[in-house]
Length: 246
Ligand code: NAI
Image 1 (tube, rainbow, N blue to C red):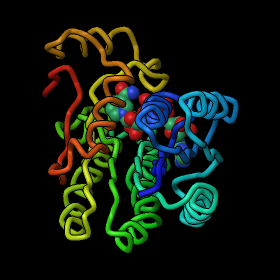
Image 2: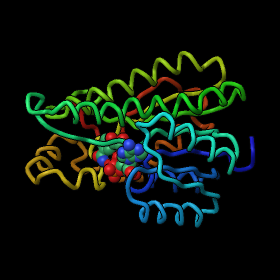
Image 3: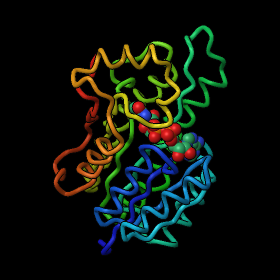
């Protein structure tokens, strides 16, 4: 493996993706990151990654577009070498009760969270198989484990990610590639900033640790799963949620 193996993190302009990118840079990886919106925010992530001593390739790439993903992976690998670690983090919500959910909101969430994970994995995994080396971590959600009212699209996409993770671990284990998912509960980011006070209060009551999580809690778990300390762990969805369960 190169001195600083390349970790590719999707959706890393802000939030959990940014936290993971910076944490993996601190752990000794070079970083490739993509985002859909937020060029300036992505530039801030790049600076934080570089301040941690890593080289960084950052560009806009829509995970729902197979062609853009292929081009992004080719450009990142040309710049920084083969992708040793893939973190599929890009994700969105479009919440509504199912009967009020327009098809566009169903399709966009599935296309981003589930199909986007497929696109990046499809572009990266064959190279990892040839090198007989690689780690994939998918950022899922507790909604994909327990379900979540008004989030049928989101929960279905993340449930799909969880079983994709398990299935792929069965396919790729023989090539020395580990595939795991992390399932965060409520983490303080821009995504959860939009929740109403009522929803936040109710959520707190269901969390045994009585606190929302921080980006660092997720980033630390991802860093562990990526590292050799997790060398015998694959096919798992690990919850990082303060004990939340419903
Ligand atoms: P965020 O909204 O702060 O950031 C999302 C990132 O994904 C941004 O960089 C955005 O540009 C990128 N993105 C969105 N659509 C994209 C697309 N089509 N192509 C490329 N990039 C795209 O979200 P946050 O909170 O940081 O969430 C990150 C991941 O963690 C998501 O997969 C989310 O579902 C998951 N998660 C978050 C929780 C939370 O409480 N914040 C809880 C459970 C899971």
